Figure 1: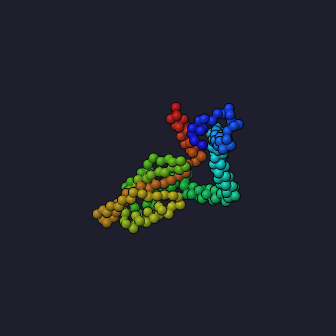
Figure 2 (figure 1 turned 90 degrees about the vertical axis):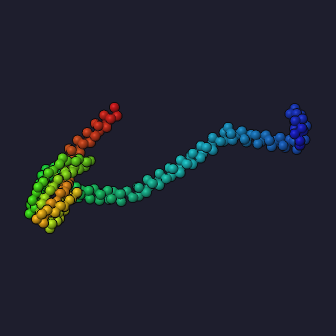
Figure 3 (figure 1 turned 60 degrees about the vertical axis):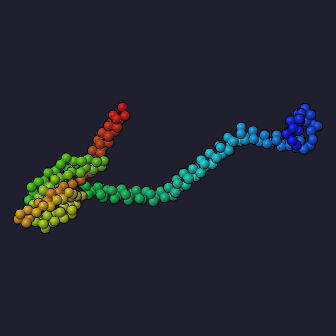
Length: 210
């Protein structure tokens, strides 16, 4: 069927059309109906279906994760208990506020016990962090090499956590050494200090938002 023949067709004489023409027209009508249905109705349904499938995959993943967490809940609880126990053991190595003076005295006595002469022993202001505070102590001692080494070893063996940093050794005329260092002691914050710090940080954060 040519284009001219199609143009000559009259819908009023549809019943008189040749069978082949009727079939072609019916096919075109079906195609048009299907295309219109897809464009105006089915397309949105397909998009919604794809979104639902993606959501289903996501929910399956969340379910699997939570299922694994539920299965391993007892193991997680034990692990948490072990961590809390280890943290408590570490915390016991930090003195509280009342014990700090005794710890500083122990460090001083460790040097005097090795025959060292203190030219400087100056605690600085505390540096407070979230759960603990550290006190830097500037130290300058004079003595023999072995005595200074023994002093450093004694400090490292104290029952409390003490670190020695920025060590500088300078020889002097009589064969002795001058040692400059920063000894840092640490203590844990008590509950009142932690609460006060959190309250101050909260107040500061609210002030910044205004």
